[in-house]
Amino acid sequence: GLKDGTIVFPHKLMTVLERADWASQVVIDVRKDQDFLVGIVVMDSNRIRDFCRQRNISVAKALEDDTLQKLVLQEFHCIPEARSLHVYKLKRLLLTASPWTIRNKLLTGSHKKRVNVILQKYSSELEKVYAVQ
Image (cartoon, rainbow, N blue to C red; front, side, top):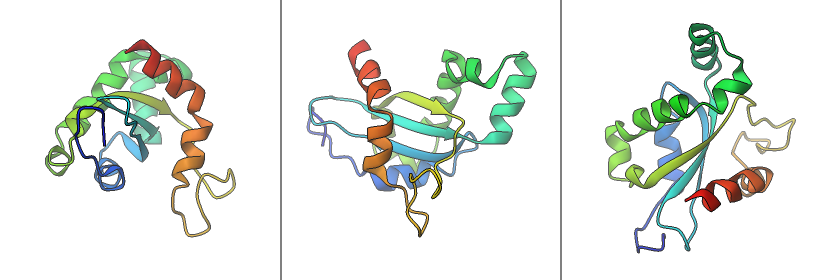
């Protein structure tokens, strides 16, 4: 749960958010000392490519773009099934274009996310996000 007592089911929320057009893979970071959630999102390759082409920017630049983060959060917040899973507590995202795979050891042999390994991989970026709030 979160600092404000909100009970969150991150795995259910991740499954629902992965149906979004912008996302192909999602992990949610839940911290007991925070009152909001942070998501790590592997972007859908077609959507990110189109976004970059329309704006004539690189993927790296797009991933740092507040506009893109707002678009993805907006889509997540509009998913009906996510509302009952406290998606409104999802305030910040870390966006990446690098898929999680068995080869890079971020998925198990049965293609399940190694959530703790993924959270560890992005730990320094997560700390920066929490420090800003």
